Image (cartoon, rainbow, N blue to C red; front, side):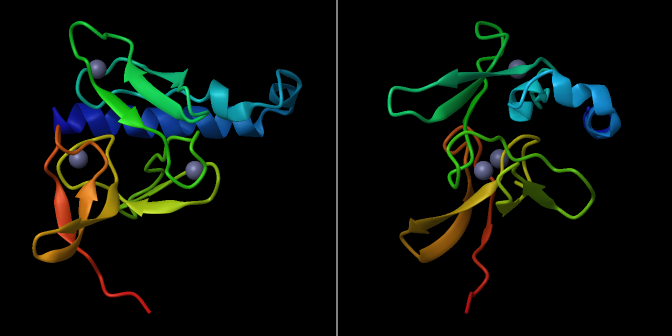
Amino acid sequence: MLSTNSAQAIKQSAFVTELLDDPSYGAVGSDASEQVDHICGECGGHLVAFPTKDGRTWYRCEHADLCGFSLNACSECGSGLPEERDESGLKTCACGAEYPSCPQCENGWLVERRGRYGRFLGCVSYPRCKGKMKATPQN
Ligand SMILES: [Zn+2]
Ligand SMILES: [Zn+2]
Ligand SMILES: [Zn+2]
């Protein structure tokens, strides 16, 4: 399962690079973020972007009935979906925001949350995913 997922991730980033290198791609449209395929880490389907009422974006697996995985967009821009593009352990969004990848799921990233015992980094998919890390002190 893990190896399948990372193979998909590699395939996908190669695909994105190809698109970006292809000069004719620029003619398709200016909204390049819409063209990027986001793969559901739970079933391998595509994540489809849906606009929410408050103007943000919400991603849901195309297999809504079978899988039901969903994810909120990047909290910085409200529309992008951060992707891990290399082995850095960081997911980066098209807007430039970077988040630590969730250690427990394929698509999630960690955002700062407050718990009973103070600050910690928790997965955006909480409570579906319980992945978390200690918050690193920031200056
Ligand atoms: Zn799915
Ligand atoms: Zn963003
Ligand atoms: Zn997670």
